[in-house]
Image (cartoon, rainbow, N blue to C red):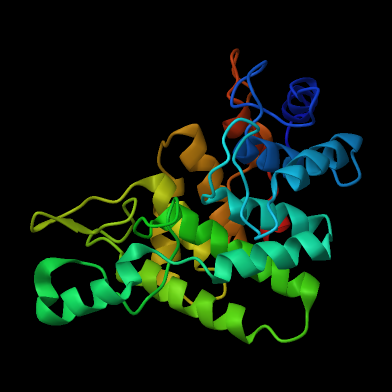
Length: 281
């Protein structure tokens, strides 16, 4: 069974005239809710084409992407633009985005970070030889942008074909980064696993996103931890990402049809709830 039509009807009703979606109805369009809302709608829906026209206009020649009409700073949303471009089968936009992603790394894998790690191995929980992705250039790598960038490269490779060695090597490195940052309790925090000498607790949402980034890797114990989290009460966003993550790893997912639309829906949460995990497979 699919989601209640209320989710899809709500998303259609909230699309802005420019083709995008804000985080809440009537608000300015941002790339993040726009991509997830568009991918949640049925394939071929006119709203999807309208949304892609907007997102494509935000992609720059170097493959980076502005997160909104009023913010022209390259950041992690370039990965979402690549995911959308690949699903739209826009090869030119996908290729631009892939070049940008392959050329972007976190500051924690820089030459200086490698030297610091060599001189003082215990000063950080990061492993500089593993390259993830930052929220914006010049920052350290974090779980969420890394997971979405891995998904983007996976989907782009399916569309573009040909030699995918560079993407494959980068995906492998980024997945190693995710595995290296796993918390002691079995899940994932936002990026670090230790702070001030203390082990950090994981969070359900970031654990789910880490599992999304680890698609293609056999991680049965991590998936089992995700299943345990999914069996417990979680936030709507964590529930939605856990459902997607478990589906991507070939496991039974919670029944989406039971989800009810709240009186004041959040567009991003509604879109992720409505997203079929197969879209990211």
